[in-house]
Structure formats: structure tokens, C-alpha cells
Image 1 (tube, rainbow over the protein chains, first blue to last red):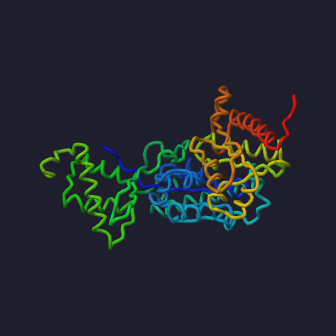
Image 2 (image 1 turned 135 degrees about the vertical axis):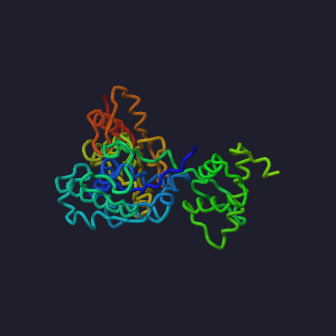
Image 3 (image 1 turned 90 degrees about the horizontal axis):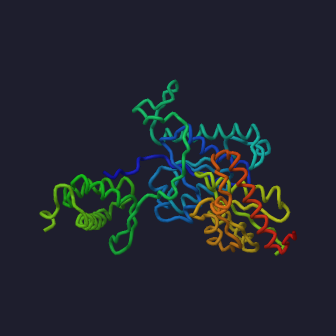
Length: 250
Length: 136
């Protein structure tokens, strides 16, 4: 059965190549991805919001996102909000971990103080990840208190970015205009494979799931529901629903 | 062209070749031709920083990309700049099949060698752009 991507926290570093604080953002994010919270986080390169497709731009609408900026220009936070979605948390390195920029080394080679700042910022990010996911950690075992993590969680991993695996989305017409809904193809596939027919009882559940990933204005709920059900019916006609569909549509 | 050539590496954070792109850009701008080049952070262009866009419009840019999504080249063009040369690290990698870089936060030896090979190629492009073709 197709599965919707699990809810993770998205991390976006400005990566500012000109200043040491930019390097700190990138390395701190890597540290969280690779060793501190590998199962709970995902990343994407900031420029993909411009250079990528709709799936890439859906990143911050799909994942609660923490942006990490090196300086007060806040390119990651502002760029993410401009092209994708408002970040849940915005961290600025120059505000917090390292007030003395000169002591950090260069953008290419961080000093000891710079490397310490990487760890400090990484801890700060991990704390915010826990807050967003409402996770509490057992400090002795290094595991979340509720629920056991998948096997291998504590092992460092080579965490990759999510470019090329953008969130699938689908455009449809609602009240005379085109809207793009994130994860709709996956949601349709999941509903179809569990035998949910395009009828009124499915409509409620379908809309609840669509709402998890997409903001739907209350005043347009009915228009959205109509358009989504119409698309879902077409989707089901294109492939078999477990248990049959012909008797309902005809 | 006598203005400094802008070197724009991608902001790759998830792949080794992104790190190679960045390291290659540092080698060019800090070691092999610091007087003739300047590193331009891509994040500023994503934001549409006016000062950066003005600088971009008055100088040639060499975009270095770590993957086929070519963010650096696309963003430079989107910001009104001219990509005089778009360099794909993957192409450099193909020319050096013996080098298999790994590591992202810290490149391994192979990654550093590839970054130097990349920097050599970029340096030649800078020479050509400025009409300073070296003679053998």
C-alpha cells in the first residue's frame, strides 16, 4: 500500500558560503540529520525553492520547518516563507551561539570556537525538533521515551537531502480557479487501495486527510470537497478499488 | 571583461558532489585566482537581494552545480545574471573516474582531489573570460 511520507521536521540552512556563520548553519544541520535526530528530520537545499518544481516548493507546507540562518539577512527564513511556507522556528546563528564572528575561523575552515558553535547550534535545533514533534528523550538511552525508534536509529547515517523526492502534488479547479494540493496523489492511492469508494462516508475521511497537508478555507470547504471527490471518482475509475466500484458509480 | 568573475557554487547540503562544488569554489576564489574572482552566496540570490543582483548584472558568473537540478545556474539566470559557464561537478567526476568522493560535512581525500580538479577547470574558464588564456 502506498504510504504518506511520515511527518518529519524540515531543516533548511542558509549555507551562506561567504561567512563562517553560514558554514555553521550547514554543519549544524548535517549534525542533526546524521546523528542527533536522523529519523525525525529531513532537509532540502534552499535554492531548490526557486530552481525546483512544485513538489520542492511544497516542502515547508508539508513539514514543520526550522530555518537556520548565519546572519540577520535571514535568507533561509525569508526565502522559505516567500516560496514555500512560513517556518515554524527560525534560528539565527549570529544572534545566539557565537557573538564574536572573528573567533569562528573562516567560512572554509572553522576554528575550535567555530566547531563548538556548530555543536551548540545543532543542540538548539534538536531541542526545537523535539518541541515541534512533542518528543521527550530518555537521556540515558538516547531514545524517545514514547515509542521505540526504528532499528538503527541511534547509528549515524549518511542523511541525504530530499531533492528529487519532492512531495507529490496535484492541481485541480476549485470555484473557478486552479489550486495545487500537496500529497493528493498519495492520499488518493491510499484510499483506493483500502477499498474506500467515492461516496459521502469517504468524503469526510478524505477531507480530514487532505486538511492535514493543505490549508482549506472554511468558507470554501464545500467547493474543495466537491472538486476533490470528483477527482477521486475519476482516479478510482482509472484503476480498480478493492471491493469494486462499478456498482456505486453507475 | 575585467570585473571580478563571480563564482557561484550550489548550496548543496545532501550530496558529496555539492560539497565538492563548494570546496572547488573556495579553492578558486581563495587560492588560484583570488584577485580575479569573487564567491557569491546563492542564498542572497534566492532572497532577491538588490545589491547582489546589481553586482550580478555587471559581471560574468560561473555557476558550479553539484547535481543535475542545476540550482546555481538556474537561480543566477532567474536573478537576471548571465551564466558565462555552467559547470556540472558530475561532468568533472566523469573525467576523473578514479575519484569517488564521499562525505558531506567533511570530504574525504578523493573529494578533495576532485575539488582541485574542478578548480583547475574553473580557473581555465576564468582565464578565458578575462582574455588571459595561458600559453603552454
